[in-house]
Picture 1 (spheres, rainbow, N blue to C red):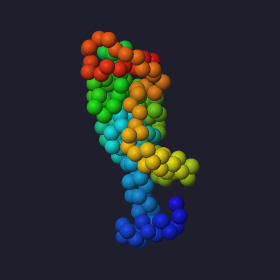
Picture 2: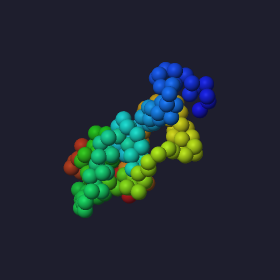
Picture 3: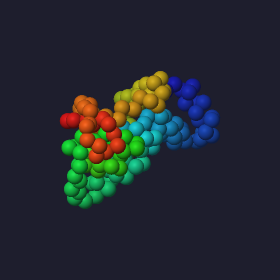
Picture 4: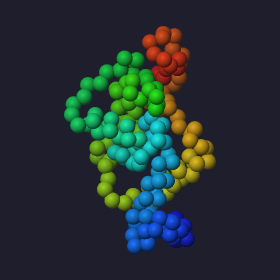
Length: 160
């Protein structure tokens, strides 16, 4: 980020005495442009190593607090999106893990320059595409098939 842009940000938010705090505020606002990687809802930052919403952050935290035995009623092939994310805990947790969420990924302090550049590139890509760029396929290595039974509201299923 250029010094000129940083100066404009500092002047705009009025935090002349603490440039790092101002930059952190600006950068967090930029990350929020990227939708939650798990469900596509509005993200609130990087949690457990992945850009997620508050709901997925809390779900992952609760799943890690003790032993869980989630079961999938639909052949471990549920679509996890903003509307359906609460229907299958098993598939939601698997998607969190596939995307790289981990208790070990909790980091304190600054992001490296390479990490910031990667996020900035993704922010620019999301802004170019608009917010419709979220891909709800869960898990990401699934292939769509048609579902002939009516046990759920979705006509498409994803098979691993």
